Image (cartoon, rainbow, N blue to C red; front, top):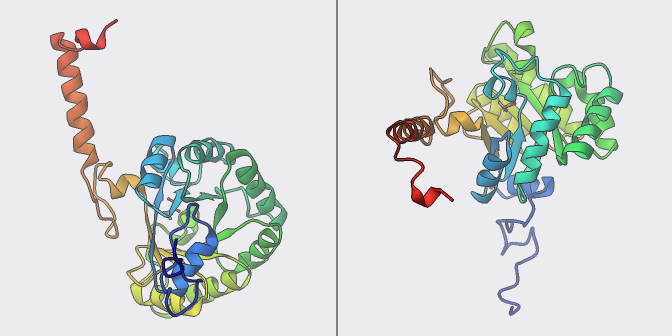
Length: 284
Ligand code: KIV
């Protein structure tokens, strides 16, 4: 490689865009924020989707506690346990080699104290191989984030609508409208100041999310939070058109995987019933 071809040191005039790394780390997401770049995050709960999304270049994968509704069939995210999250997270870690793997701290695994949050995070990092955790809640968790960060745990804060508090919030509702906007900005700022490497915002008005992104130094991620955040996240089944029924306004289905699977299942069953599958080429 000639000196002209050498990647320029990050931060110089000539090299505005950071070089995509072999393994995405929190520092890379920060570089993207610093240089006006953007990144994508998707949920994943199993080895194969993790591998597909990893190979597709998705920068970060989230083992969301949305596994409770999207995989396990619960009504809310509340019932999923830390042990169950560890099973899903192990599968994702086995499938993804490049993406930054972030795992949700499920309801009941961190609220009691910073020590409880550290213990749960250590289990996720040690037993399931995740590289960061995500924790729902506002400024009142700043001490948690400070203690976790000091313990070497990268923390993604999750503010705005926090599904684990849906009963306290009175259902799935946009947060931060009108006078409530400042509270979202204050939550994000307090958590970023406490050491969170990234702030995720769910269902907040686009202008409030933009104000948060401008107020915090760290990268931001949005879901139903407009277009001004550094990154975007979607639940993969929503992104791929896997689930039936009405999707939330912020969802865009980029494929119709539900139809593809349905067609495949029908064709398979037809061939089994007609005796054409398995054929000689599938037999020993
Ligand atoms: O659990 C999850 O999937 C999430 C996303 C909605 C951000 O927290």
